[in-house]
Amino acid sequence: MSKILEVNQLSKSYQSGDRHLTVLEEISFSLEAGRSLSIVGPSGSGKTTLLGLCAGLDTIDQGSVSINGHDLSQLSEDQKAQVRNENVGFVFQNFQLIPTLTALENVMIPLELLGKSSALEEAEALLDQVGLANRKDHYPTQLSGGEQQRVALARAFSNAPKILFADEPTGNLDEETGSKIEKLLFDLNQDKGTALVLVTHDIELAHKTDHMIRLKGGKIFESNMLSQTTA
Image 1 (spheres, rainbow, N blue to C red):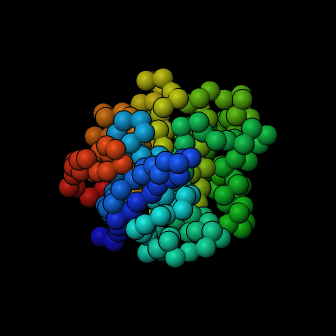
Image 2: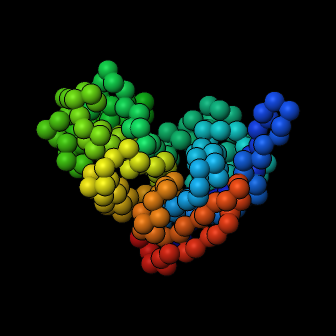
């Protein structure tokens, strides 16, 4: 099976005053198409930084990251944005919906950026798939947290991504709503054949993925294959 994500000897550091802070050190792993991987670890272990580097949202200091065969370290910012537009979906803890747009308009944005003439129809179909067809004309402030995250999921899948990056997708939700979003997330990934990289504090959620990486002090402390079955 082809590798959708390849991370090789990835390191990242920042300068803070007179101090040189190493956030990640020599991180290596890969993820095959259609498979899922969770990244866990205590606060400050580098989870969100790693996710940002893997998605091309931050600049790599050392090592390399490839998404669907594209080496991000060799690309300009515009080229990285193109790779994201064509290959990547995002789900964040705080939803990041545009408050002045309706649920339908939020989902349509990536489709319109791709120049899809069928943006309206595709966005409506995605909202229907996440159970929000009857809420399409509502604004984010008129939706519950769970409904906002459903809109965010629909938007994340609107460009038919080959890989989805999810940063604490249930972190702002109560347990019952979070469980529903988890199920929807995994169901959509399986239905669309999308690879998943999931940052979470929830070990129970992490164990639902095929592969779990545990970070500690910016290094891979533990790496476990949780499932050998093809998704």
